[in-house]
Structures are given as C-alpha cells and as structure tokens.
Image (cartoon, rainbow, N blue to C red; front, side, top):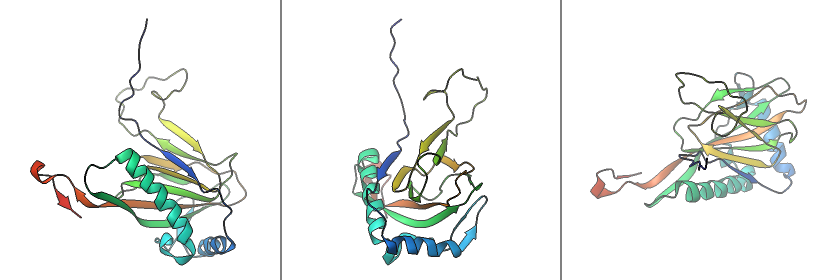
Amino acid sequence: MDYKIIDIFPTAIMKFKINRIFTKNELNFVNTHENIYYPNSGNKYSKNTFILNENEMVDINKFCNDALQIYFKNVINPLTNTSIKITQSWINYTKLNGYHHEHDHPNSIISGVFYFSADKTNDIISFKRSEYKQIQILYKEANDYNTVQTDIKVQSGDLVLFPSSVSHYVPYTENTKTRISLAFNSFVYGELGIPYALNYVKL
C-alpha cells in the first residue's frame, strides 16, 4: 500500500562548529572560573552568570550571537521588526561520574550550549520528548516518531542551539577530563504582533 508520512511541528536543533583553536587567554579565563562556582546537582556552574559579557569572551560571544541570528532568521523567521539577543550565560563543569539533571530554560526563547572541552567519542547532550502519554506502547525499534529521547554527540568547539522549552540533560560522564560547556539564554526585543490584530507590544 502506498503511503506518505507528513512531518508536522518538528523541533529544530542547530549545530555549529567554531573551527579554530581556543586562545590561551580564553582557556585561562574558563579555567579560572571553575574555582568560583555554585554547586549543582551532579556538577557545578560559574558564579558569573554573564560570562559572554566579559572581554575575554568577545570572540566567543560573536560566534554564539552570529549562530543565534541564523537560527532566529531561518527557524523563527519573524514577520515584524523583532530581534533576539543573548541575555545570560554561564559555564558548566562536569567531572568524572558527574551529570546534569533534566531541565529546561524558563524566560528564554532559544538556548545554546558551547563546548570548550568535550570528548567526541563519549559526550552527548540528551533531549527528551515531554508530552504526556496516557498509554505507553513499547516499540520494537526506535525511530523519529516513537522515541522519547534523542542524543546528540558533541565535541570541543561545537555549539548546539535549541528551543529553550525543550527538556534536556547530560547523563553520567565517563571521561576523566572535566567536561566544560558554556550555556546561554536569549530573549526577543523590538516589535511583537500587529496593531490591527490587537496583539501588538513593543519591547
């Protein structure tokens, strides 16, 4: 029997690569903040939660922001004079047997994770499908339609962008080298909606 699958409401996740070696100044800055941190369940994160605003991160900030604009233009594709900017950013440090609990990012539109140190063989970021299932039918083999989790392999220099509402986590790491990632949130500004539609707001 002939048939066609029509995908509706897909979730866009974009992956970028910086394609350069980190400078000594950048790495020293990142390593310094490992000792000035908040404890988290399974790992820790920098007390400085505006990392990309620092002078040492100027080039990393530009790379992350340029990627964010590509996502916003091609996925969100705003009709009105609406822009987006990075609002907050911090560094996560995950050691051997550490993890990052399942979570999403409130008060943000698009979130990103940039990897200063990640093992391309073992390191992943896991995304979870969050809709409620009244019944659960076990599948023989996972596919894009029945799976509840998607794992994306990452390595140093990668940037992953995704909708902030998507639940994600990092499973227990088996790496002896500390996994270091910079996470950030974003929000829109400018014009939302259209006056005659009675949904206009200017931010």
